[in-house]
Image (cartoon, one colour):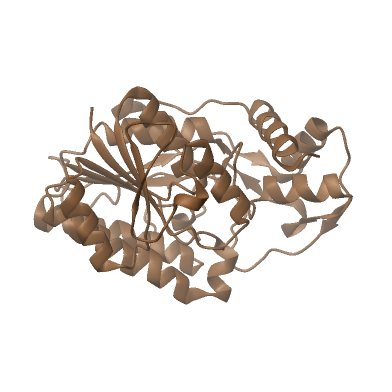
Length: 351
């Protein structure tokens, strides 16, 4: 099988993806900066499950897994150009899946520099390393946030996405533009992955499901933004991972029908494309809260608040290209996914 670099393997999606690829027989090198954006117990817990022991981690040093023979991990910042270049030269990756990024819409308003460092400078370093080391396919995390002020539902990769409303979204849109440039200039196959509200076991502590579950169990009120008038296309982690693997295994070849007179934003003449990976089934925020309450067997105290800067009222993924090109459509129900998360949360935090 392939030798694959996955960046962000102490993170939510990267952790699950690394496990899945290792279980099917790929050789994987994981990379993460292990920053303190959220609870480090969760990050080290993920790493520990894949056999990467906290005490063995040292910046810039490859660590072998005690669980998977074909897995190694390195703590490294994406903006560390020399470190990235050395890793690529030494390891000779077939494919790269770049999931490492500074995440979070609201945090990008408070700390914009972190997004420039990781999501812009870091991504250029990944592109350059792929270009100079004969990488066969670069897949990278974009986000549903790129749709910004677009109100045409469902969101399609063929829609214009020129009006982001957070620096996080702008950084992800920038990644897509940068990737297209490298596909065009250097024939590097690249695929952007527009994820829609990913959730499930080992999920991010800054996301709504984690925040709501924690608050309800502790007897604290939950904040309901836009007075509950919101909906999200919640997508279960296993569905996301399956979508990423199918994308990784099918590098784009370019769209021969693409025309500069009527340019399609989602494809190109070059080996470049983007995909939405979402459940194609938006859920109202209050229905989401009701599902959590049902799984916990507890009712939430609700604090209704106005819309927050950078947020959008609704997301809804058009996944027809995913179906047409890769034969895949996410389908896990919210009830199942939230139940799996609640079970994990209670076990991890002993509550």
